[in-house]
Image (tube, rainbow, N blue to C red):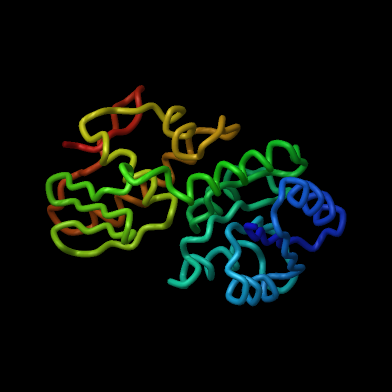
Length: 229
């Protein structure tokens, strides 16, 4: 039974999510603040974290940053949950490594779909999809969660890794932002294309930061993104 951690200080939200998740067969853990959340994550190693932004003492952004900054927890999927609907907050959550961002009020059914999709993506899709991929000087090994360019290992968030791996296995092809949202996030995404833009920008910053480094991810105006073959 997979463990899901809910981090929220609103009792009715916790009860709502707990009921929905337990009905789907998940074991639910609950934390009411950021410090308690990190303690539970380190002790229980949940399969996924549903993380509210507005928390006492340590907010959800700080918790997400701590999760991604620890090698023991950085692969755990994080779905951020917040009453904030401003674009800046969504971008910040994604930039800190969140896999998804849901704005309150939300549909429990939609959130359950996102949880299932995220867990399905995290569990892998079969042995044929786990083979290393090499594109020019770029090596991606999903079994070791390794990304290296010119022999230098790079550190990517789980979602950045998944997006890069998707593009690398289809190097030379260009995909629309909507298609990438659907394929990488695993459901019909209700947000906008900025989600993909943020992740592409971060991948570029990490892989193309050396002076004279070639541009790996190509932007085709009016179409989308692709990895140069």
